[in-house]
Length: 227
Image 1 (cartoon, rainbow, N blue to C red):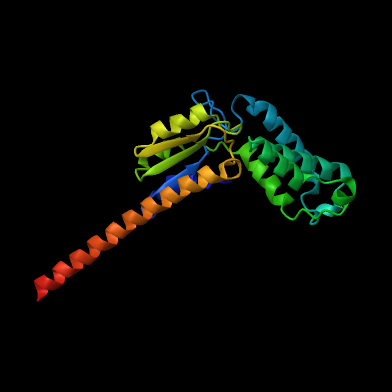
Image 2 (cartoon, one colour; image 1 turned 135 degrees about the horizontal axis):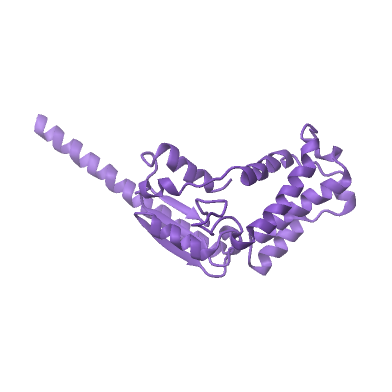
């Protein structure tokens, strides 16, 4: 899910095919460890994982049900309520919360006919989060490419102080903290996020241009030498 995919990618394949990386509010560790309390939900992880486990357990008997509309109504309500809870925890600003509420609210009549096409996929993701001890810290020291660590200062998913430790672990990282943003930075701070992304892309473009120009110059010198 999300940027966790990149931490996994770096551990498996290294950075040879990646020039720069913008990490948006994502810890390389999901489950809290004795030496790391910056996992998903921080010190409230046990409480919130219990909610996830409850909904996974309730949906398992219906794993082969193809259509969400065929689930018992009470289960559909619980699934969408937990989904909305996770979305609300991902944002900090009042306007973002209002948008989430508006987009995720389902009255009884609408829910009865709601065909949630990705519900099984989301349940499998929750199962993975609960069962697999994702921890990609071992490979961080090998991520030597430039990294911008963009942190939501009010993130309820990953505590900002622990995210700042990730910056310190990376060999070549800079850090940007958006103090009013939650985990969903593009939603909470769209303007500041656009500025950060624009600068990140422009820097990458400048580096790529320099490399191309150097290659052209080298080829030009080689041509002169041959002539």
